Length: 566
Image (cartoon, rainbow, N blue to C red; front, side, top):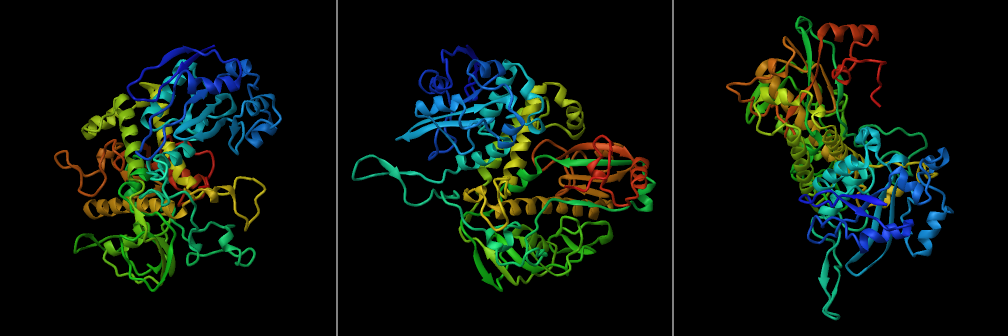
């Protein structure tokens, strides 16, 4: 059998190699002993990346594996333990991880010293490459698929499962939990007794009760069917907000959507997050540099009068703005739990805060910086290959973005996978139970990971939402124009023209300081879509929904049914 091999070092090329292996155990041996495949470690104390083998349908047939999973196997996410291939692996002293032999099978032998014995299998016909993130990758010929995965592996890392799993693995690879120290007794090396500085360590830590999702063991003392309110539960989520158009906005021709590039990655950049367990503090003095969750009343913050620049108060139309403190844009009514960036923004707007209590993390650092830099560089390099450079003028940028996916569909899939790696891995920081016979109050599998950190997820989302609100306020203060809808990282404005350049205030090619700027870098914006104001009013009238979130449909204008936002 001939294998299409991708060595995941950026400078290497794709090659064809003959694979003599006649069984899965022999195939697992081949990249470790003969082909010497893999990826160099991403961090000094880390480990080299494991080889990845993608099994085509022809390879599955050759090695006695099913081309497709049955419905029962799909539900289980694996083939049965009694399958002959699994027995072959056991006889050869190979082991499988707890997820078994599924679409992303991980096959290993316990490490001997620094030598690793582990190989990852990817099986596209078993839905390893989810079409939501990988597009049509699973249907590509072997050569094209090898190129696509090779680019992703060299710029992000060798896939270790779904894009979400790979994103978490990237965090760990860049900040390994342990490091080696010289053993004076033997002259060799051993694992250090303390965790690697800047990492999350080897062991999970409990979240604060307010950070725990419903059903978490920390909440066992709550009455059955109790619904926690804002004063009991941290709710840092992305925006889903809309309002009716004003008479003036109805007189304009278009609704134009702009979308923040890699918004959640940009929100993670430079963010200080907790590395260890929380400390409960009563009546704390707020510290914007201290990550944590704060119980504080922000209902007194009035968007009608805020500080947009340092010590300069500005009057705004608060009725046309969402609150920065709630995902639905509603003004808070009393004390609620917030992540540090949200409370810091209230202070930035010119208002005093007096937290009632907090769960803060004194062991902290910029854990996500390296993760952000790696994904940013991967995104920018791939977009540059597609003809969208970081130094284009606004007009040239809009022109370059028009139809960029058609220039190289395979690289366009890589872009999609990079974006999914960002969002998916942040979601897995607060992964919920996935079947497993779980019942409320019982621990679930994800809780055993050091990377199960709902506080980090909340901080990133908080900062991302605040970054967006800050730009909206700057834009409103300078232009008098307000958004009509916001969905996560997409903002819709009423405009006389169809282009973002028709309402974004550029002077001599320079954008409004602190406002929206067109460009491909994370945190800058691109054109999401344009529809007419008549379209928006007709859609809302058709569904009898004056506040239907038009940002959800602005891209292509297709509205099949009223979406509840789930």
